[in-house]
Length: 463
Image (cartoon, rainbow, N blue to C red; front, side, top):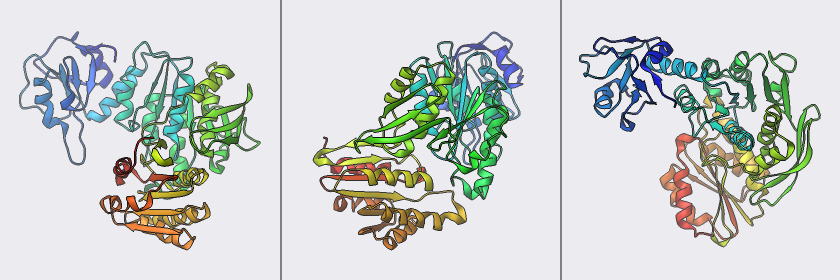
């Protein structure tokens, strides 16, 4: 973050400076929402959640060196030499500050949303655009009302482009985040079943994702998945030009998989208005053509050559726990995809497992959350797909995963083991891992199946 003054802060958040402090030139060099991460010159913003209220830590943050704070609560006492800025709502004020700060930087912004693959698309966009520009990108799961503003506040004059991921689980959230970002290029990766519990249907999920569209700059564009029927239905209806990516002939940016080694990469033929060539994607799964196409479309928009786009794709590195390929001794491969899960991403991950060249293919799958009344059928569908894909063994973890197990048995998976929780699953891993084996580990974030990945690493040796 580049330093701003208290006077600028007051303007940005529409706040009121409480009595006892008058130096409007006081510098603010950083923003923190965690009182344990305080450094001199920091602005502390206390957030309020269902189980916590950051206002309880204002005094400790200020005593720890923070220059001042925002507050939506009355303060019994004001520490001398510290500023207190009264606002209506601290989270909303953080958003206003980020929107104000964003306007200080005349660089392009790319906003990415979608039901499945938005983090992978964001990482691929950053890899490709990073060949030519210094890119600020969303890290980890900082794609919400708090994480996105904090990411924007990391901007400084050295950055030349920003790629920001936007998540949601209800109406209004994409509208809020996109209004802060106001992207030059918008991306919607697809429309799936994630968060269908709250939104009720894919059509409603489409409506929620399309909250991005009005906030794209007038001279901007939106990149859409042309193989998604709901997104294809937006053709001719978007407020800015739409570019479609996919494997269908109607897509201006097309790709088809031409090969791969089943271990570390795939090859595909990438065809765009400016290039037609074979490229190597350092990841597994046919679904990886979509982030590559999205990045190619954005790359051409921002002046990259075909060689630069190809080089960027080859430098792609996924976010941790996003289909990370871990090679172990005795020919064992672990596919760590524990970051999150929904029915579409589950099937894509199982497809990657099915394509492996190992003699034994094991799926360790846990509950997919936020599916509401659709959950039993959607979990059973994943189980049935395991049999269709030729998976040898399923370890189902969790209550909802019982439906995956039932579907797997019905579809003929040879070995199905059902576990109540992670601890029970840890006890069976040694029974299913063998030489020349590929193991997929995947579930929703709340299941914390990365603990099973860690256990698998204990049970195996380094390659």
